[in-house]
Each structure stands twice: as C-alpha cells, then as structure tokens.
Image (cartoon, rainbow, N blue to C red; front, side, top):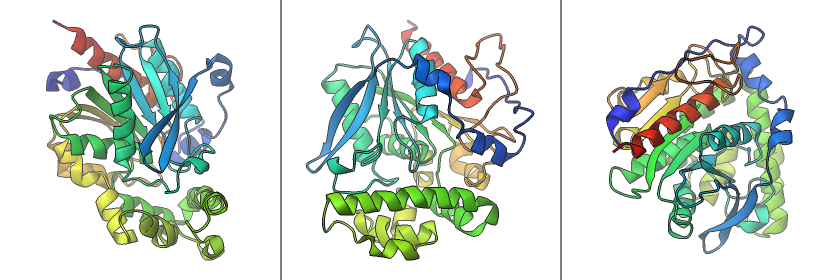
Length: 348
C-alpha cells in the first residue's frame, strides 16, 4: 500500500466524444445499451451473502481460473441501479482481462431482491460491503481485494476505506470511485432545486418509490406507501422513508453521517477518484475540500467534462503504457489503476 504506487502512474487525458460535449449528453448517453457486453458476458455465478440476521444480498461472481491466488475487485453500483448495469458489466470485463476476479454486488433489495431484506439500502450501509469482503477473504481464501464504486456506491467505498484507516481489513489493497457522491446534502440540493436536473431527480424518485411499494407488499408493516404520491423531491423521500427506516432516524442525520466527505482524510489505501467538473448533480466544490488535497493516498482525476459515470471518449486511447478496450475512459482508468496496484504488489 505504498503511496508511490498511487503517484507514479501516468494516465491518458480525457477528450469527450464530439457528439457528447455537454454533461447531459454524456450522462444520458450512458442509458444506451451496450449490446456487445451482453454478447460477450460469460455466465457469472450468482451468490447470496448474509449481511445481517434479517438480510441477504445477491452478487455475481466472475472467477479467475486461479481463484484463490488472483486479485479480486468488488464492484458497487449507484442509486436505483443494480449489478446488471452496463458500467458494472464494463468494469467486470476490463478487470477480467487484467487478471482479476470480480464480484458485482447488489445493494440490499436491488436487482429484484427486495424479498431478501426487510431494511432499505442507503449510502451508509458500509457493513454490507464489509460482510461481502470478509466472506470472500475468509471463506474463499482471496488475499488481495480491491473496491470499485460508482456514484452512490463510490461514496460508500470511500466512506468504508476511511473507516478502515491503515490497519483494519489488510486484505483490502486499494480502491477506485467514479463520480462518487461524497456530500449527500449537496447532491440532493442540486437535484431538487435545479430545473436542468429534473429528469435525473424524477428518474431516481421513480426507482426509489417503486422499491418502497414492492417492500410494502413483501414485508407488511415495514413501510407505508400511501405517502408516495405526494412526494416530489428526494429530500421529502429521505425525510419520510430513508431517515426513519435507517439507523439515522432523521434526514439531517442521514445526510451528515452517511456522507463520505468527513472520512476522506482518514483514507490510508491507494485510491483513485474520478469525477467530472461538469457533473450535473455531484457538485465539484465537494472535491475542493482539503481532505482530498492533503491526502497523499488519493489520486484525483477531474476532467473539465465527462458528465456523471459517463466519460465517453472521442476515440479509443493509444497510450504508450496502456491500450484502452473501448471509449469508456473512466472504466479503463480504473482497470489501469488496479492493474498498476497489483503489479506493485508483486514486486519483490
């Protein structure tokens, strides 16, 4: 976990696709299906992980032939997403070609697994990530584990490795986050108040409301869905559901205590953070915090453009130290970074 492993790596710069110059064009283009991923995807092993006495989650494991000795990356999706998202499949494919096993992890109740958990998922559930990593290390014998999160999942990854500090879970060797939500209140405010973000807010609200409806049918008494029709903002949803149904109790405590930003300064694992300065709803001001500037374990890539979990490039990079597999620049940078960390682990 040497700092030099983070600092001595040269990354190719990002140039957006000429048709996708705006943050909204980049972000919305990620909704277009990548059919090639479905054609090439192998049959991954579906596996349940027990995360607490009343909850299980489902993840999809793609194992390297050398299952115990190969490095492994745990991948975590964003808000209202799941393990089948194209960016999760894209990361899994790229990392597999770098010699990694991958585990695409659903958050609680995501991907049609609402029946497996009475509680709802939220940004502060780092104990679920810990349970999965512990099982992979203790039950499967994996010695070198890396974490990758996107959007809400990226914030969760940063928060957990901040909680770990230097000594806990030594099997966790590094991490990467793409467009991480590090300040929940700041992102919520942008989504709820800016007209240009209405399409994103409504998309997230639709998914969150549907999960409450499904959970109310499957777990009578867990949540009252009758209030959903009146909810028009994410803050209202979190005030009515996320806060009360989580350990935080209130929306104010949830935003303050589940955000990653207060723990970024405590990160002591080699970590890559990729965020676009034009992200439509993750304010770049959050990444100007001194915690990012003064932590030598963190490498930040912050192109002026790129949208949210998008970064669709003008062309496949022909970099002298790395050949990208496609136009998805951020996914390739994560693969490049983790490959570099793993090469460092193997040096005598």
